[in-house]
Image (cartoon, rainbow, N blue to C red):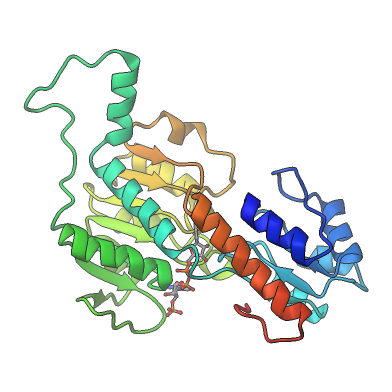
Length: 308
Ligand code: NAP
């Protein structure tokens, strides 16, 4: 937790804060359910059905997740065990959209590759055909998942880069700028210069991006993933990049995070970030405060602020 969040947690509650930054071990997850009234878990803390089954009479009554994504929690199993779940939507939206734009620009304009060239000392100087990339302004972007973050990315693309925006979601969207709803993922993939993923993770969206979807994309197109790694069949993505079926990818998340395949690390046309979506002091504090707002509401017997 940031200092501001830790200070509030200590002031308002009887709190134990875990210092390690690695995900909870199975025994720690069991202890969390067994010994605490409320737990604030985060990404990677696998509260799966087996964990709830291991602790038949949990003391825990609320998992106030730190993060909007909760695909690491089996929400149905939690509720069956009498444990409520909340998350931190909204606090993360702009920062994550900004990282999507960072990845789009870095990948389109070969910024990572260029930076490595300068750092290596091998740069020979400017010339008219050096490191030509993809011009982003005015291009067509396709956004898969048009919720809070998807719309914030679309807004940046429309107003900042005069891009045409198409999207795929389960329901129809009417933002205050022009967008077109795609009929299918393959149709969207085939029609855009940049395909951006902004859906939640979980069983429903696992491997949404298959070899077929990648095969439908233009050979000049880019794939950007700020959602969850499991949304992409990573082996199929590597094959599509190796075979030149798509021109590049910008990734903030990975299927087997934090393991990033050697093949991806070797490719210059791929931008790789270490899950930076919400990584600013202000945003992490806002997320922590919202998690604590849920805890405070729960303790006071009020409805959760942002229930899952
Ligand atoms: P959100 O507001 O719930 O939006 C999710 C969108 O995905 C909605 O438009 C939803 O459609 C759509 N969707 C869900 N399932 C779908 C499916 N099977 N096919 C097509 N569209 C589907 O969530 P959000 O706040 O934008 O966050 C999205 C995700 O981003 C989070 O769940 C999290 O995993 C990820 N994230 C990553 C980072 C990072 O650090 N990289 C940071 C924050 C969040 P409807 O609107 O029609 O329901």
